[in-house]
Length: 231
DNA sequence: GCGACAG
DNA sequence: ATCTTGTCGC
Image (cartoon, rainbow, N blue to C red; front, side, top):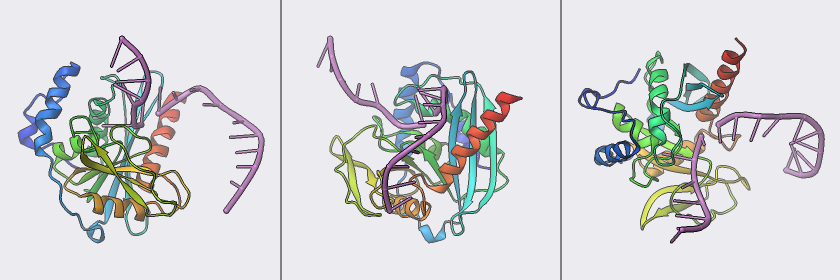
């Protein structure tokens, strides 16, 4: 459903050279916008994830109703990796197939949720910022492990959080979504702010550490990968 | 130079 | 990310 902003679609968005990719991130980073996004106004949330096999990958997008957590729509895309995994250049590997999957969605989600970081990135332009800027829609990221920055251990209860700080800047939040369970890292991508993002993550994580949209996308991508492997 | 390093 | 079973605990 979402489309790359025409102005950006005319640019060279997928460099093959790592240095060119870093330069592009630095240029696009200035387009990131951070502002509140009322969680109560969010109806549909799309979770994104990618699973890898020996030679191919499967990108999945699952749209969940924020109120009921029921799955509203979903899409998958099979592809061959075109960029290696390089810390800091994650988007160049996962965004192309993810965008292809998003195009197949029959609905327009209010917010997109990435499995990775946004501003918590060396050039302040992680996967969530990259997707957000390309389609100019609200996006943020939730990661399972640390990448850049430091954060103190949050309190033991659900909802406790600490700032994720990198080079003197608050680039995200270490958030505990369940009592006594290892926290997750939330960082803004585009058109949302940290408070809105964390509030949404809590609402979308009623039972598991990984919020529903991303958890469903993770399950769907592996299921599809297994299915294509047996075929 | 060394260690760290989203998925 | 992926290779991988059972098991301890709420």
